[in-house]
Amino acid sequence: MTLGNNEKKMLRAMLTKANHIWSLEELLEVTEWTDQVHVAGSGKILMEENLVQITEIKEKIVTLGNEGNNAVNNGLLEFRLWNWIIQQSESNRTMKGLFSAGFERHEAGPGVGLLKSMGVSINSGIFISESEDEVSRQIKKRTEFINKLSKNKVNAEELDDEMVEHFKNRKGLINIEENTTREWNLTKKGMAIQDSELEQIELIGEITPEFLQRDGWENAQYKEFDINADAPIPMGGRPHPMQSLIERIRSVFLEMGFSEIEGDYVQSAGWNMDALFIPQSHPARTMQDTFYLDEPKKIDIPEDMLDLWESVHESGHDTGSLGWGSKFDKEESKRGLLRTHTTVNTVKHIAENPESPCRVFGIGRVFRQETIDRTHLPEFHQIEGIIHEPNASLPMLISTLKTFYSKMGYPDVRVRPAYFPYTEPSVEVEVYWRGKWLELGGAGIFRPEVTEPLGSEWPVCAWGMGLERLAMLVLELDDIRELYQPDLERLSRMPIL
Ligand code: PHE
Image 1 (cartoon, rainbow, N blue to C red):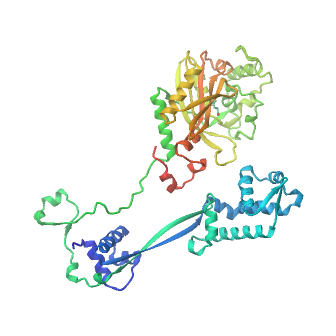
Image 2 (image 1 turned 120 degrees about the vertical axis):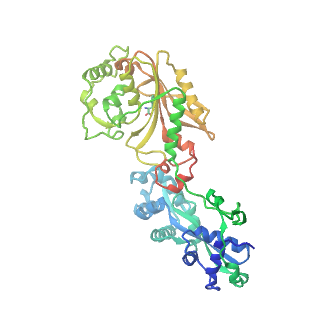
Image 3 (image 1 turned 90 degrees about the horizontal axis):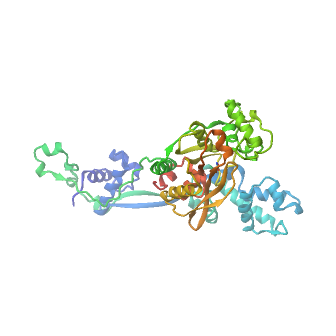
């Protein structure tokens, strides 16, 4: 038996109280080690030598997840629905009523499912239950369970199994963590070991040049290494998955011969919309979709640009188009806003370089007044690009997008007819993934109403795609919010791109 110094030290420490069962903290204290790895490693060797026995105690700890915290603050979904239902007169307990009471569709569906599993049914559109008291009782039980968890971590043993089972199957409500604690005690053989066997000797663990220059290295004793021993996996830093994805997209476009452009978040309605021939009455321009700014309330635009947009919007200028036929408001053009798409960057690029052919792309943040849910955020990113040259064409656009997505790992791409006020033809780009076609963005050839006022005479292939959509695909996520929650554990587990 060759015990190392650490094992000897641990044994000697344990022999001070030979019958004691030691916890990790106690062993760290008596050995004066600061790293628990020493206790674990030496303990394992001592166990293999049958000097020490290790007892593992496994426990399950239950805590609330994100949805669970929401439920503590706002009530469980079934609680809120049921509460609403029982407050209505019987004939008013309808699905329709539920929506007008402010329940969102994405809540109502799963919520009704929960109620049904408690025996509530829908008969000619009306919620009915054989035993309302029983439903209320069930919901009360669930609520108490969730509230109990809100205060503390709780050991699963102290909880109702049935409730744990139930909530485990609901997304985000509870987390179950398995914890293992260990205890160490001496075996008979360990207690009988002689002091003389526990003398420290110098064991060489590291062969350094300094060591080899010393006398006597030939006769030194070397520490044994167990290359199969468990070692902690270091948690190193890594780029955020979104950052890696952006880098990858960047290198794909650079590889395809594109240059990168950038632009500001704050833009005028003129550049963000009028330049794109989006009519001033377009619903997407209203307050519900666009964040208009108080500061700056107005952004200057050169008067000759405004004149051109006015003429194009009102009567088509000399593009051959009839325009929208309604009055153009130059003051509306000057309103400050947060850009709603990165198409504003490519359009400005053309305006600044109307006579030089280019292939450019940009990846940037955009802003829209969206309600946050599984697939929507009010701030997200777009991948935008144009090919501006005399022979730009729809086939060129489609093959460029196909090349891009193939290089990203998605070779099956198709386009479908679509509509944007600024392109003709317009297409929607879809990628095939796991048996489904997913829509990832829009594309088309800019209309003359867009390019002519900018001073360009060439067709422009243009596209704009959602980066988060692509990220969900690449990282296999089903909730967009996971990308931006500061959950280091989850982020560290996402694939390296
Ligand atoms: N700007 C469009 C969007 O935000 C995408 C698009 C860009 C469509 C360029 C056509 C041409 O969805």
